[in-house]
Amino acid sequence: MDSLLNELRHIVGSTHVFTDGDLSAWEQDWRKRSRGKALAVVRPASTDEVARVVKACAAYCSQHPASGVSIVPQGGNTGLAVGATPDTSGRQIVLSLQRMNAVRQLDADNLTMTVEAGCILQNLQERAEEADFLFPLSLAAEGTCTIGGNLGTNAGGTQVVRYGNTRDLCLGLEVVTAQGEVWHGLSGLRKDNTGYDLRDLFIGSEGTLGIITAATMKLYPLPASQVTAWAAVPSLAQAVKLLGLAHRHLGAGLTGFEVMGQFALSLVARHFPQLLVPLHLDSPFCVLLENSGHESETHTRAQFEHLLEAALDQGCVSDAVIAESLSQTNQLWHIRESIPMAQVEEGLNIKHDISIPVSSIPDFVRVTDALLQLAIPGVRLVNFGHLGDGNLHYNVQAPEGMDAAVFLREHEEEVNTLVFDSVAAFNGSISAEHGVGSLKVDKLEKHKSPVALEMMRSIKRALDPQNLMNPGRVIRV
Image 1 (cartoon, rainbow, N blue to C red):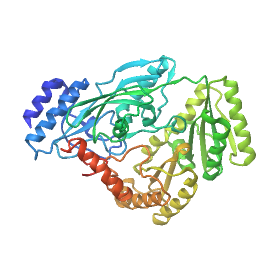
Image 2 (tube, one colour):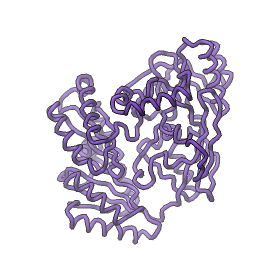
Image 3 (cartoon, rainbow, N blue to C red):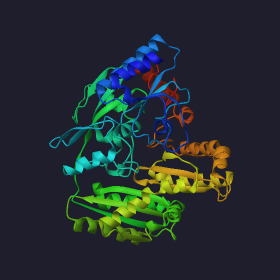
Image 4 (spheres, rainbow, N blue to C red):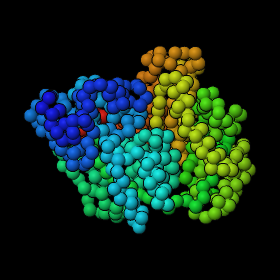
């Protein structure tokens, strides 16, 4: 394989092809659940270099079909489904897009921004805000994740209830195909009815069909006012009722609706006591709501107050606080975003990123909680997520005093089977926003219809006949 590595060095420069030393930043996933071995880490600086790298790998595979060489596209390597780190074969090239991080254009009149795939999400948000616009995609990893990875997994985040997933925010893509050709699809058009929607095909494909190198994303006017509230609710059913009230009272102003279980918040209080978690000690669930408006803050706050008054009258809220400053708002969101890190401090756990019809969420949680407690007495459930769009992070922590590594080793398969079977019984999805990666390939084959699976395989075989692009992820061919 030396000839291939030498060609890659010629394309991107020898200083941007890593084959030895500490490659853990690229070879190990964010959760440290998996560690692979790369043939090389290659860091191109342009779409042309990406295309030449892919062409070189495709040609090498044609000449050496038994080599097993393949490409793993990688952005910020913050994924939670082990979809962007290499396997242990030592024959996969990690193609890191971190050097491709430019904002190519901001079109104020068209309300779009065209950015390269390696652009860090937070930088994109800040660039938009500097121009008095909002880019609404927001998630806990926004300081390190990249827009290419967000598109590859169709990431969601905290404002999906108003603005949709990453797919809904994208108007065009630039993609390097598995043959090393470039599809120039960076149109900022909102209407283009000229055949198959190739953009949507690549979004959510986790690098298995081609490599997203740039994207044209939607922008929105900055809201004139934003008000955040934290409410204690007596049950999940009442949280769903509160969501309905929020839709009626706030309309499109409802930009965030997060639910957090008592145990999830107790972990934050235990491991980050400086955050001062409100109202969680006497309530099984709390909800974090955000109302954004294009009128005065007084008007936006009055809408919130009317909502909470109605919610208190109808019994779906037992107590509530409204943030009085930007600092308080940031603190409330920081509590919500600290739940995953609190879980890390508590020990290894079994994560689930599922979606259920909102109306069925209370019954799903009731039934599945009971099944898990019956199977593993004392198991602790870290339940939180984006109730506004039906996405729960339904995570399972070992019983108090049980070694977490032993818990994972002995119970992970049992827990996953139980949870995913329950998800299927409630007509849900086993992956709402984190993707399938390699962790859920086997589960997808069980829970996706045979017709859908065969259509996916047909698309993969047609666009990537050499199985060069991120093989073994999302679907096996």
